[in-house]
Length: 240
Image (cartoon, rainbow, N blue to C red; front, top):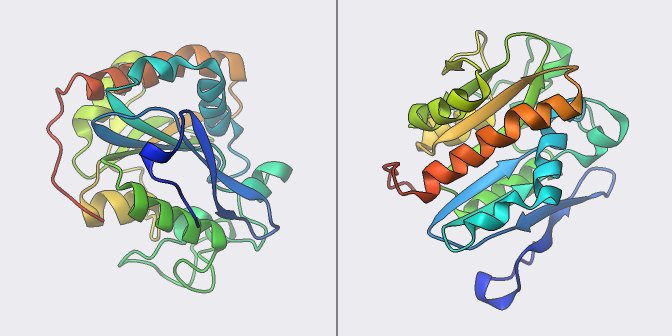
């Protein structure tokens, strides 16, 4: 991964973090430069189009331009481009990327086939690209956009309840730090619970048409960024 420093490029800027199992590029966009570093992630699961479509629309809509000089906003629209290409939860090797991170609770045997954790922690090129990105940009907030078959919510891990409540005030979703089942090897565990980085997982209702998703969630995303830009949140002093 050969990434340029901020002062060496014009914004917005697209760079390639790495490549998927099938050789598709994993894009990283830097949209703005400012005080606090925020990372938006979509397409961790390729069948959760509601999440990554929301971020791709936000990228195209350019509402992020209002945060120039206030926050450093990064985005990985599709972490799992192979899965997104075929509408599949898992990557091309049949691994759930949200069970493949090197957490202390990582286990080799999944509770269900759809949660396959891989041969070892961080065994997948997509996970390796994400970890390298996190080490490089040192985000102070991570938001990962997903979708679920029931019980949509704003899930938070680490010191992020206040941030989750800002989103929930605009999208009406419940706020929770427990989705009701274990998630060993997940990003929320790795970043939020183990490293104290505020981490939000936006779980949208699977099957919701894309236009209503945008209409309901774009204001919540803008509100979150406005809250961060205002300097109202007290950030933990953590480093990866």
